[in-house]
Length: 541
Image 1 (tube, helix red, strand yellow):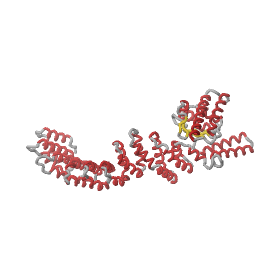
Image 2 (image 1 turned 90 degrees about the vertical axis):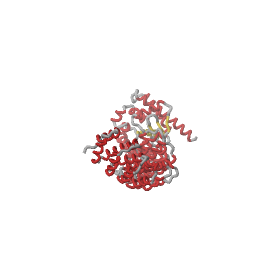
Image 3 (image 1 turned 90 degrees about the horizontal axis):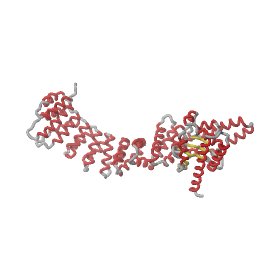
Image 4 (image 1 turned 45 degrees about the horizontal axis):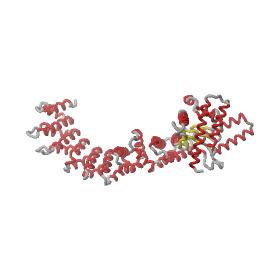
């Protein structure tokens, strides 16, 4: 018999067993405990479960709209099974573990308690506590800790022994009970081999259950086993549908690694697990999803946070993807993530400046500007004279963002070089930086001879920059310009005068106030209104 056939038969048996369980839950609502019909239905349900328990335990996982066995949905087409999933999920059941010792009584007690209202179940300590109170041990709910199962079974066996057997029988039953536990754990039987029950249970866990259990796990050995299982489980969920769960995995590990109250060994185990998840396939999934249109913004933000948390391991994959990415939104997200990585990303970004593709160099320059690390200025300086003006302009913006004396010096060298195409942007950048070191060069620009008013736009840019800087030493020259008159080129001169008046208002030198008062009475209404407006906005001393 092939594996596919065996799997099909198993899922068919499971579907039948779940339908029988649904029937039992419905029946339990109408018949008292000793009614023959109830006994018959419970025995039918037990018979349906027996083929599933021949080789050991049966674990099924509960979701809001489906029931799973080893990540395979059972009875997806069956309305009643989907209804059972919703019914159990509402009662906070995420996993059901059926043991080979399952009895009809276990099934009856489970069904009788599960039909209680969720609030009543919660008030009574949960469904598992209700079952244990009635000594039902064939079904376990959301329980992963073997020590809990072992202790509960031994307590129940002990109570049974004290009330129903003689001392000799009690010894025999206790021994039998211990052997049953050992067989369940797979310690010394031919059927279970050498694997422990811990490992068997952990192998049945879903990724959600592992993430829930790891932070609260008391056993060092099981803590390690859970983390060993986690990478393989996560790799089975590298789909957009499970993105939130993948991100939760990284958050859980980050919490463990950063928890100073945990033992050093546990934090080391968590860090080792994290390193296993920073390999090409997982990082590739995160980056691909980040670049996929339609992903909700909150999840995108979480991906970026995860990439930043993983630090230098993500830098090269992000740069590699940026180099080949054609989608504008994706490039923006990749660039933002690299910028958030900060100085960690700088060494690889500087290497990427050697790329032959102009757009790649421009993107890297923009990222370095966002990072704003002054030590990158010397690497950006040569790009101010790049033959591709798109790169040169991006370099100006980057240096303006980085700031500092070295950046100002680089931009002033560009001004002195006579690169007319980049003059306006360079001067604007100097104003944005508000560095006093730029003031002498800016004053030199507005004082330069311009008989035919061809430098008007350049001078306006310089005046704006001086106003932003608040350069007191420029006030006298700006006052002179604001008062200037001419017989030709009046419109251009008027534009210069209006800009000079605005700059004087930004500088707010007290000696400029009389000049502005006089200008507020000019015949030219544009000049008069500009001066009056500036006076009205003059700061009170």
